[in-house]
Image 1 (cartoon, rainbow, N blue to C red):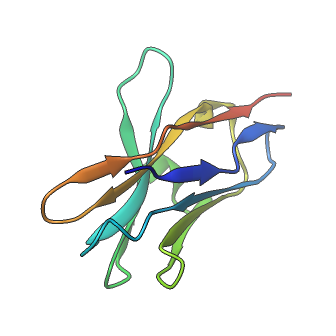
Image 2 (cartoon, one colour):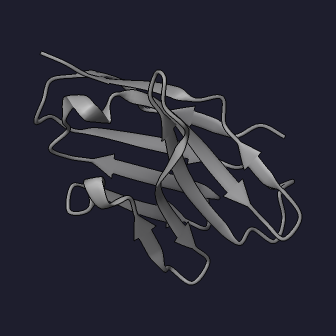
Amino acid sequence: VQLVESGGGLVQPGGSLRLSCAAPRSIFSINGMGWYRQAPGKERELVARITNGGNTNYLDSVKGRFTISRDNAKNTVYLQMNSLKPEDTAVYYCNVYNNWNHYWGQGTQVTVSS
C-alpha cells in the first residue's frame, strides 16, 4: 500500500507550499488523515490531522499558518502551509489510519531558507 505525496520543495521564509497525499482505494474504513514531520536530530511529530467528521488538530507552532483539508471523493489530504519559517524545515510524511493500521507516505522534503 503506497501513499503518493507531492508538493515539497525549497521556499523562502514567509512563503507558501501546498502538500498533497493520495491514498489508494485499497485502504478502507479510513478514520483520519494527517501529516507528520521530522527534522534532523529530532523525533517525528504530528503537524496536523483531520478525522472523517472533519475535526482537526494542529501542532501549536503551526496554528494560524497551516491548514489541513481533505477531499473524500479523491481520498486525498492536503496541507496548505503559509508564512513558512526556517524551523518548519523537515521531511513531511503523510499518514492515513483506520481501526487496524497506520499507513505512511515516503516523505517529502520541505526546506525553508533564504
